[in-house]
Amino acid sequence: MAYWVLHVDMDQFIAAVEVLRRPELAGLPVIVGGRGDPTERAVVSTASYEARAFGIGSGMPLKIAARKAPADAVFLPVDHEAYAVASGEVMAALRALPDVVLEVVGWDECFLGVTTDDPEAVARSAQAAVLGATALHCSVGVGDNKVRAKIATEFGKPRGVFRLTEDNWFEVMGDKPTRDLWGVGTKVQKRLAAHGITSVRELADADEQTLVTEFGPRMGVWYHGLGSGIGPSTVDDTPWVARSHSRETTYQENLTTAEQVEAALRELAAQAFDDCAAEGRPVVRVHLKVRYAPFDTKTSGRKLPGPTGDRDEFVAAAVALGATLDPEREVRLLGVRAEMTMPDEVDGVERTPVRGRI
DNA sequence: TCTGGGGTCCTAGGACCC
DNA sequence: TCTGGGGTCCTAGGACCC
Image 1 (cartoon, protein in one colour):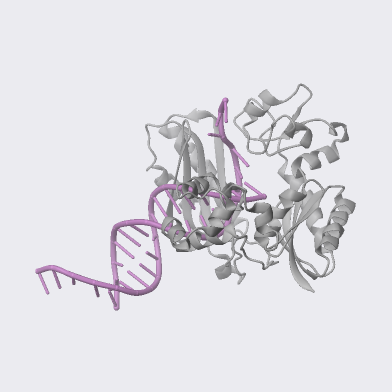
Image 2: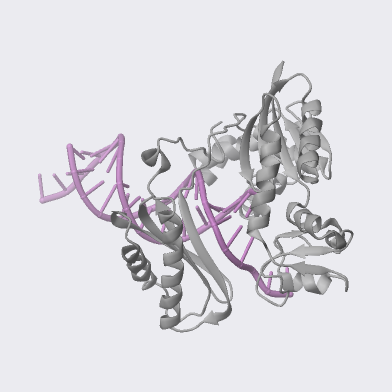
C-alpha cells in the first residue's frame, strides 16, 4: 500500500451553488461578482461554463465581462454565507470517507491524504460522496505530493480524475510555461524568463545557485524543486487558525481629501479589530494598504507598543499610520489589517505553512 | 480592458546588542 | 580610536493563493 495525496476541487463552485438554489438559471451564462452590478468596480468571482464560452473568467473586471456577455447572461452578487454553508457540507462529506486525512485549502478545495493501492477508486468515492451530499460536481487530482496533486486536478476538469506523479511529470508538464506551476505568478515568470527559463523542464534543469541568487535561499530552492514537481506531501488536518483579519474597500468614487481618507480608515480599522476581538485575541500589529488612482498599490505596517484589546487604541494606530499616506494623490482602495498574537502562543495550535517544507 | 476582498509567507536592510 | 562578526527584532515592501 502506498501513500497518496488527492486534491479535490469543486467545479465552478460559486456558480454551481447559485444554480442549485435557482434551477431556472441552469444552462444560462451565470456570472457572480461584487454586488452583481456590472457597471461597478468589481471582478468576477466565478463564471459558469456557459459564460466561460464567451471568454469570461475569474478575476476579470465586471465591466469587461458585461461587454463580452450575451443578452441572456445573469449577473449575481456574491453571497459568502451561502458558499460557506455549501463548503461545510462538501467538507463533511469528504471527511466521512474511510481512513482519509483532510486539509481544507479554500472554500471549494481540499487535500486528502490516504494510504491505498487504488487512489482512483478513492477519488471516485470522493466525487460520489460530494455529489450525493450536495448535488455538486468536483474534479480530483491524484499525486505523490501536494504540488503534483494540485496541478493534476486541472487536467481532470470537469468531473474527472487525473494522476500526476514523478513518473509522468515531465511528459505532462515539461513543455508547459513556468506560469502553470502552483506558486509561480506573472512576476516570477518574468524574472525566470530573464534567465532564459521559460518552460518547466528548463526550470528543473536550471542551476540552483542562480535561482538562490535571484530569489533568496528559501524561494530559490523552492522554485528549483517546483520544476521537477517536488513539494510537501504531508496532509495536515490541524484546524486552521487565522493570523490576522483585514477589511478593505474599493471606492466607487476615488477619495480626494484627507478627511475622507481618515474617516474611511477609522471605519475599516474598527471592523478589522472587531473581527479579531470576536475571537478574543489581542492585536499586535497594524497594516495599511492603499491603492492610489489609477492603480498603484503601497503597503506599510507598524507594531503596536504592546498586545491590545482596546479598539480605540488600534484605530488611533491605523490613523497615525495613515498620516504617512501621500495627501496629493487620489485613493481608490484602502485596507486595514489587524495582526493578532501568534496562534501557538494563544492556544498551542501549531501553524500550518501554506508551502510547507521540502 | 481595467483591474475585489480575504488571507499567508518571504526578502532586504537598518538598528541594536554582545 | 577604530574595528570584526553573529544574532535578533523591526519596518517596508512584494508575491502569490483562493
